Image (tube, rainbow, N blue to C red):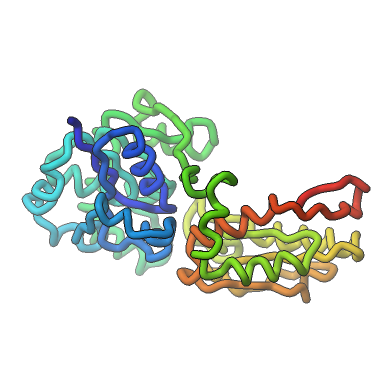
Length: 314
């Protein structure tokens, strides 16, 4: 039987993919890169320890240590696998080992940032030049891949596709972001009691007519790279404007201490400037807890939509 390695777990994308593959009888394992954020560890997207049976921790993956890792070590770690699915820095390390990536399924900056030397500050430029072997290997690892699962429509993506010369390898299929066997409405209720934050979320939910769960990374003021701005400030300002126009609607937002601009407060009109804000420090609130919070939207608690007279479930 073919054995598949899904290497990297940014945004928990590959942990979700591995579970779906295993559900279909495919021998797939998740290989965690050395620097994976705790927020994207499988334990934060599940409620038991079952993931340990098919998850391995690698001791390579940090781009700045690329030259320290031997190709023999990488090749040995990948030897058991027939098919390699990669994201993040994995294409560079796989290329160094002399293997070919079967499917690159990127999360973003592994395509538009890591293959190139971006000149920002003098320090960043010096670091990128020092790390040039990694950038070259990342670019070659992507270019030599059999197939690349990346959305070809956005103009920025098209620019990167042309720059990398990979148009003929693009074969876009949506990644499965959510594991339905836990997080669908048919199943999530079984896990409420195992969520550390469910009671807190429920208490917040009961205080508001309109509650926004905003779990995106906060990048809206600080320049990080050409494509990372999330526009969080627009949502916060929009909530302020809505609150000002509809003062009889109790508005709230749950947001997370995640990103370089977390904690910053954009200038906003209305009550958004003094709204009750509920930041939960990452990684204490795991993605599993987020799933429980989102599911509360569908509880049988109908409230009057005071802006239109319709009945909605919030």
